[in-house]
Length: 254
Image (cartoon, rainbow, N blue to C red; front, side, top):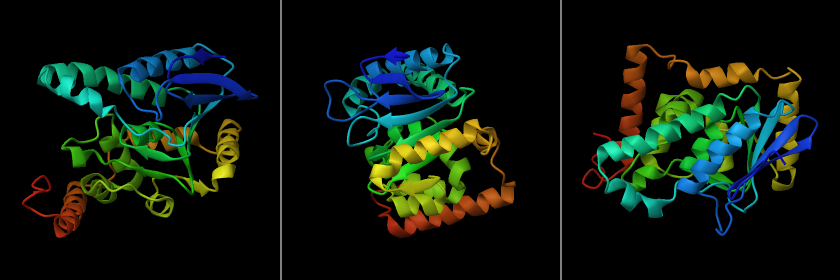
């Protein structure tokens, strides 16, 4: 066992490949509460310290993948004021960045709902394989907040600005066919084939048949649009959102 925590375990399952498994003890779903975030940081350090790990598949032991941040912690967090929120959020960004920066290929095996921070966890992986029974998305706007773990930056580079704005502003979970069409995931497979598909991808990446470093770099580079193209993309997305939303209840797109 490489790491055994209350929310995450990491263990070798094949030659050079480890399973990074979310299984928050005492809860019916995985979520990013403060304890999970701390365990996430410790698990990353354990992987970094183990030279035998050449690739990761990220999985969930529950029927959902990760449902997002723990909304029961929001009230106490928001009551502390803006600076306290920043002081909490920036280290969390550092942890997600540290996982993304691991010098090994990482594949998310999305077995169920991956929403909010759960989908942002998928986005820090280099590849994403989705069960045909799963859903993904960034629904935070329905709570009056926006994605806080780097999803705004990464999704815009993975699926394009216009698609990303629509995903975030409309806040509707996406089914597998829509996620694959937009490029948010790399493959959709039957639920019973999910782990095999994730293993196959990471093996190909380790063998050099997939350029996982280039795949990761796409999320780190500036958006490949000039100012005019960016304006057109934002205006297109804004128009699509305003056409569907009630302006009286949905002022943000303005």
